[in-house]
Length: 355
Image (cartoon, rainbow, N blue to C red):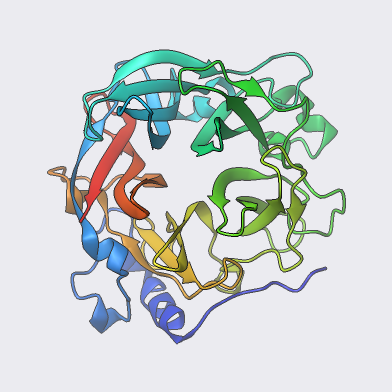
């Protein structure tokens, strides 16, 4: 079994002590206003976030995982997951859709479906979910996750055991997007003892300053400590092959029995930055921010964003996750996330301006 790599310093240990006060951290409780007194370090990113608005509230649709990009036409393009029915139907019915607007806050016009499950014996037969898009050279690269529920028994019987990362490319944001190969772009390790032998999911692409493609991803270390962690795989070609880094997993909170979730990675001000949903290190409905000088060794987590009630006029604390950053001139300009609730009590997007 691999030794679990953790990057926990005194700031994290203090925040863990705070988070362990379970009555204080029920999910419907606000984040404390006195961060410093409770050992919580707020990132400059969090401090820069302004009030936001919901976007893509669609009747009879759940919307999730909104990835933004500025098109050559000057419009804001977003690629997002959507599905009908209950929220749990993302496991079997999610597809990726495309919408455009004149500004990040919308309003958005939905243009239609971009990718959906291929059916049959394909690895991505059923749900297509959690897109992230970037322009790579003269192509648009759309990473996503997929699954094949009928193949669960080929693994351990659990639906999650078929989740993998895929890639589709297009010459235009308006499509068509064509899948790269018949197999996942990032598969699980064949060695059951490895941390990522169960699934690969939630991709985050970093176009490294050295010209390489760094694909950060989450895996569930189910056969060892049952914790979810982050790692990276690197390629010199956007189509792969992607080689997993020997220091993986790079980010783990397993020593405090907390999970890693929904990370997005970007490079700015000569540093690497990772923003993710918190799963209880500080508060179950806020975000974490980590930074790094090399993209491999990451800092202790800081507060990355506060609860939805801090940025909107909503009174109920809801899940807000799958952060994606819209960059402008090499700096974060807007933060896009998925947010439960809304007008139709389903889920939609929310967009926050970065000062």
